[in-house]
Length: 171
Image (tube, one colour):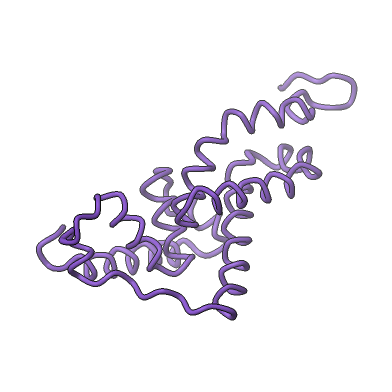
């Protein structure tokens, strides 16, 4: 059983929120960068999620680990902001096969970023959770709030689309 000070579990104290943020921050940022496509938007997404979770910290800790909960907030808020942007702006076209192959001199990381940005948010999130955070499909489904079969479908469709964009000579 966990340590208790007064009526409050030690893991639910505000100080532990700060400790958790320091420990989980780099992983949350990496996930958010993969989801948003840039460090500035990623930092905003992580900060928004942390601001949202802080008042609920005790309840979140009592229900289990906060990692999935915070990632879900990041995904949900990113989806909402993406919908607002799409109503106002034209989304740029996905990279063509020439730029996806690196023929224009772009580095692999820039090409990968462009390819990821061409995916719908749910597919991008599923790919980031699967391949950056190494989560199972059940864990991805929990974070995305969908059935496990839908999480598998998101990853499968994203990979198929990325392969199409890269061309047949890339695996």
